[in-house]
Amino acid sequence: MTPGRVAGITSPVKVTSKGQVTIPLAMRRKHGLAARCPVELIDRPEGVLIMKAGRRPRGRQILATLLRGGKVRGSTADWLRLTRGDE
Image 1 (cartoon, rainbow, N blue to C red):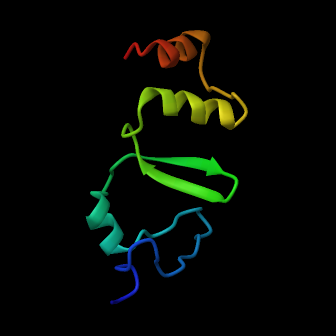
Image 2 (cartoon, rainbow, N blue to C red):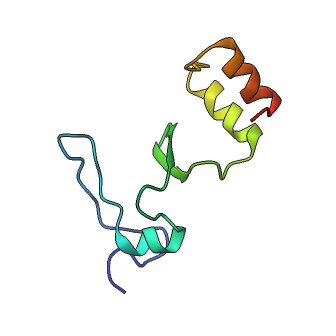
Image 3 (cartoon, rainbow, N blue to C red):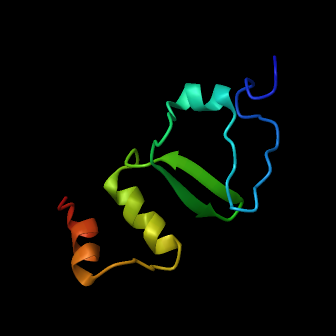
């Protein structure tokens, strides 16, 4: 198999001076990451996890916020909307 097509394994990519990375085409196709598709970056002890935005259950979104130090950008109303599920 070619790099990028083995489950769980891919070729390393470099971060540009603008902080951008290129996700290999095979992975973008497999996970439905089209151009301008929103993604979330999740800070984990072992590295950064990239997920399609909005694909995690609300509880996991809240947990991710708390695990990154509980820092929520925005107002109190934004935090309440996140915890109550008001969207």
